[in-house]
Image (tube, rainbow, N blue to C red; front, side, top):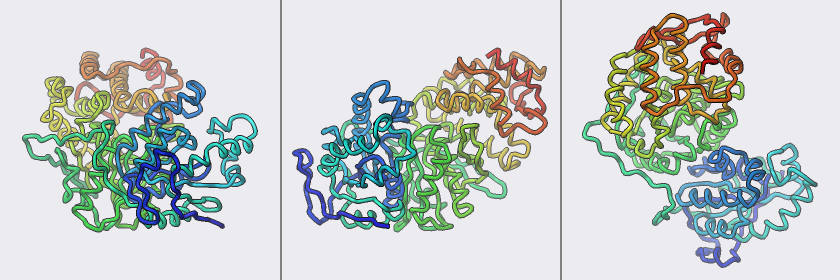
Length: 583
């Protein structure tokens, strides 16, 4: 195989790029790395591994735009044209490069915009990945996701694009690297050596006004709480403000000298650097890599899992390495699953940043990814080594995410603690107002409930199934909506109301308790009815594939009133359909 390198720095030619100091063969300082180049040059596959090698947060610009808009790139082109897409691209690029410690794989046409080139030149060390036409055609032969290749002669389209864009790549780049004939691991090793010689990572002197703000730590008038989870693999849950900056606490679970921080494109720019700095401050010499997913449930896939595994491979992670899952439930589930599978299981520390993750998904060791046929179908039980819930991060939580977390908090009262349900009714306004004392109390109490159940039934052979109250309905809704409608907490809220109705229809519970649950969820601003356009028969089909279903038929978590949930097998499908049709 050939893998040629053009190692001479490329002197920028446009006025904006020339404004960046040129250091010849010496180190070029910049806070970020940006990969530019044509489609098929390997920006994403090489970039993801390279980010792990240098401990950078990886973002694929096109995937990030898709996540933010909820639409694919071809759809954006179809609806808004290329001009509309380029406008979105410019806005997202400016926001991302406002920070530091980022490796960004740009779209092939991002360099067309002179403003983008100025931004790259001023905020990043830019690497031009080059590939010749023959190999480009071979790599893209099965790719049907590129709008510019949708019609016409692919070879001619690529020639035309190269003629227009190659001069722009050369214009903005600090380094040119030929990826032809290189498998990604080989390219990463060679390019990594070059970057170690040519690029000096620097911190930003000041962040521009459009940089995502970092929240000030919230100082609460009470000490951090702890909740112990017993069982074969005991661990401690830490709850309190400022914990992400507590180097001793963060490093305590780390048995070796390697850590991978897994996060998403929303959380990483705010908190990843703090986690890395805390680890390195407490454990000098620790090798820290980063892997960043596009934010959202759509990333919790086998492809996302493969990316995390690639990041562990790029890190050279050994058996005593540790994965730090920094984010919400999607990150926690996927990162935990990667930790469970790498070398048949390495340590994982959960660092939940959403209320929902703090009270539910980070505790108990369930890890998984989704398939098109259903949610959480591929996974493993892998208890974390610790859970560290920094409540100060909730200051930046969007209201919708706060409400989603409150749905899971309500669940604990509904399934086993009627007094907690009373408390929630009394403190609902304080929780919605982000009162720190009320939130800390709700988190600690929820974690204690889950810890008690998980310790008795770690692998969900019995009692632990109660924690899925409302989830059979919820998972069916999420799957039917393609994980692009209600978020998980919202779906759980609807699912709990439907589970209460099913219990009432089966003669197990009074309607008054269901009405009370519905009213509390509505007070928290959560949906309580099925979204429009969902087919009850299709929802039922998804339920048959749910993990809680058994050979004998559907199995649901029902209740006999507030605080008295139970598992019920062989639930008649006719009763479930009647509840679904009633909405």
